[in-house]
Image (cartoon, rainbow, N blue to C red; front, side, top):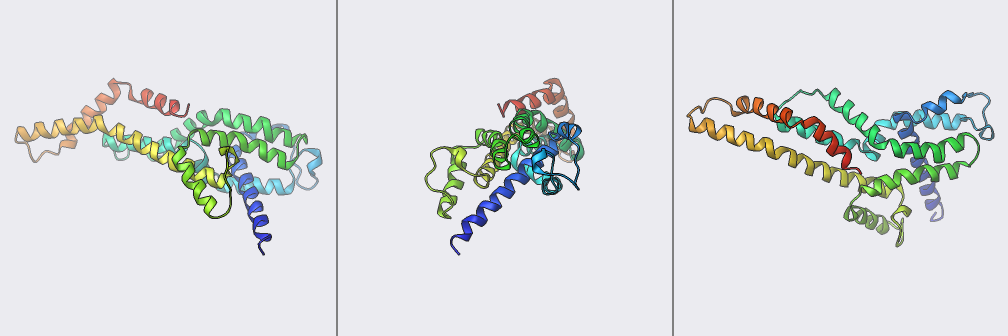
Length: 261
């Protein structure tokens, strides 16, 4: 019974890795160029010919279903969409920009940030596997490396050590010298925790200038005796003017992209 558990865990980890990597590539279009050059034949395909077999095609469809979750878990999308949401709330706009615009902007900014990583995944692992140059296990290892390097570069040491310690308590790992030796089941939650922490810190800094405007407008209205007039109605045009004058959108985009470099 004890010998079966490690084997089951290894199979589960391998399946999760394949779904994660394929989902990211399909979601961001890294598979599209290869799909134009490859003819997928479900009825007569083998791994030796380099085309996608029935099992691999099934993985692609499953990865498509999991793509939204993978987008949140393993890319820069989380930080970007949270900061954009904080910005909308800080200005005081409830539905402007709408959710579709915020999500779409976060998606394409994530594509811009993740493009070098996805290019490495495609060139080092996916294309050689389709061409029959490497085995499935080698392709998986080659595709996993760039993604883990990106996530570890954005992960705080305290968060990584916390989840690594929890994994060691479960008996999954011993003392690891190189963080690259940790699996995605450790790196992904540590990466998400760090992303949430950074996103909330950036949101707090975004709130400060708009909070100052609200306080100035509220104190001015109180001194004039205009208690019944909502301060948000007066402060909103000033906050919009401030954001436009300082070229806020360009500064915000530049800061978000630079925060991943």
